[in-house]
Structures are given as structure tokens and as C-alpha cells.
Length: 244
Figure (cartoon, rainbow, N blue to C red):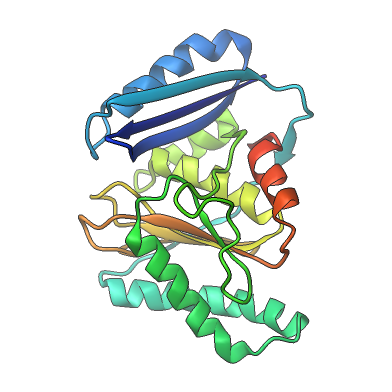
């Protein structure tokens, strides 16, 4: 297997990114698809595209995908309240486990929304239970690498007309993340017109309509219990995972 990583930017600002794990005979075809994806992104034509092809020498981990649950909401306020409730329920378990004041959870979630609404990060922010930023670079964040979805799962997802390639990408990231010592993930798309976001926990991938306004930037936040950032980075970046 080979890892393909595409990153595109314009004037130093992130435009598009994608990850695939493919067989040797698929490299040329998938590389072309990734370049086309970068060149046709709604956020603009990039002036820089990086495509990295690297042989995977580690064992591939196969993980069953999180169950997809769609939340229909027409108002951002209602969507965010639903997201907040999912996060609060999940975080409360870890606050109690670690003897922390659960009254601080709302502030932690508020901070996460501030981060995603600020946008312009190439990767995800990581927050511990005390609200500390753990990522090594607050501008770059951390990118989840060496991931893909099994072809059968991709086809199954895309049979649902309400779901898109974005869902395929997101389910791979979310599934790997919650299996790498991340409590929960909050995400909105960096595509200006795509207003659907999600919350991921071990309980599922909650796809939430209108989690942001059209034209608004997006972002991604991971909530972590562990402060062993080196181990966390190693898993998220280097552990090869195919989600089925």
C-alpha cells in the first residue's frame, strides 16, 4: 500500500487537503483525482499544490466505521445546541473520572466553537480537559494522516443522495480519531458553502445540518484526556487505518 497526501494553498492560506491509502497500480489514477480536486475547489484556485506519495511499511489497521446519524435542523442556534449536548454528555464522563468540576464543560465547548469559527488552520486544534491547547503549532494544528475508507463503504455512503465525498472523508477521519484516545471531535467544513458539520464520539458520527452559516470559515477541534502529545501525534499521523 502507498500513502497519498495532497495539500493545496493560495497565498499561504489553506485551500484543500486529502489523504488516501492505495495499491501501487492505483497511484496514477488517484493522484490525478487529488490534483483535480485541488484545482476545482470552491475556495479558489491554489498557487501551490503538494502531492506526497510514500510506501506504507507498517501494518494496516482495519476499523469499523462509526454509525452515521443525521440531525436535521434549519437554524444554526439549534444545531449548535444539539452539538453542545452531545459533547457535554461525553465530556462529563471524563470530567467525573478525573475529578474535575463539570461546571467548566460549557466554557470548554464555548472555546472549541471559538476556534472553529476563527478558521484558517490547516489541521485540528487539540484541547485537554482544562482547556489547554496541546497541538505543537497553533497555526498548523495536527492533521490526521494515513487514512482511507474501504471502497465498499465509500460506495455505500454515496448511494445515499444526501451524503457526499465530504462525508466519506469525514467518516474516515472521525473513526480513526475516536480510536486514537480522542474523547470527541467537533468539526465544520472549510468549504464556504457547506454548512453541515459533525460531532464524533464512540457513540457515533453525528452529522448536523447548518452547524455554521454559509460563507463562514470552518475548523476542527479534538478533545483529549491524555497530555502525552507525542504519543497522540504518532497515532493520529502515522498509524495506517482503513475504515470499513
